[in-house]
Image 1 (cartoon, rainbow, N blue to C red):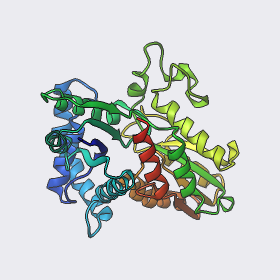
Image 2: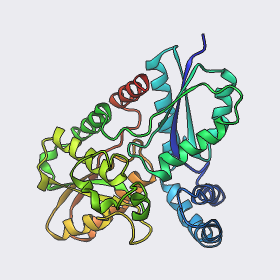
Image 3: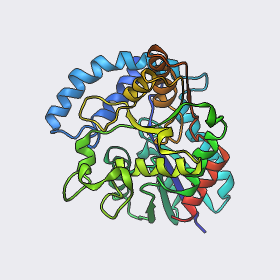
Length: 335
């Protein structure tokens, strides 16, 4: 009997921190029309003549800080998660791992899956909150690849899991490794998106019209901002946090027309207001990567201290923690 196959997918990583490999990664990533959603010619000129030539050398230096003796942390965490999920699901399932950009690529892993002739394919993009530029892009490439197959197996895609109890409990468990009462303030920092991309979710109106900070409705359940705020609400309730104990911010912005408040500005404002000790979550990332380890762990720490703060700590992401493995298995079994 053919097995059910599970495909876990994360965003991607350069093959190495060399400038040439970082350039390849940025070229593939930023030329995705779901990532930079502007006319094709303008995107080509912007990415290939301006962004990548100037950004690749700088990004390579940052990736060099992140890299370990074993390679890219994002890839290592993904492979560890794959193995632990495989061990827990047992022989009725076969688990694979791929990256949307660079390696192991989705097309190459799907070809391996095709040859195994699975009875069912369950795809879990490892993004808790739906966004066209992450989940949408992954699903689009998946479907464009599979549509060429002669035999298409039963296909299930898990589009988001921002409110899954196991995912929430996994971050709660990570937080409980800290003495929360010793912190003056807690920041929930999510990856930012251009406001225009968030607004495109709605057939009528824009995000601002739908009270996205105050709950999920039948209109906003695919809204990135709404689901981020819902994740924050669920985690904070489990940790018995009061509204004044925490803030929400959006990091990694490229210009002013991205989701606000900006996380770096929240860090500065809190430090200037007298907050001395801050704890930061980044629930948009289920594995530690450049945006958590470097952007928050290093850059935000420096910002915080430069503006009067004393200590900023990062809640480690889920990586391949036991509760997260349990959650992934539950998502798969109930897909």
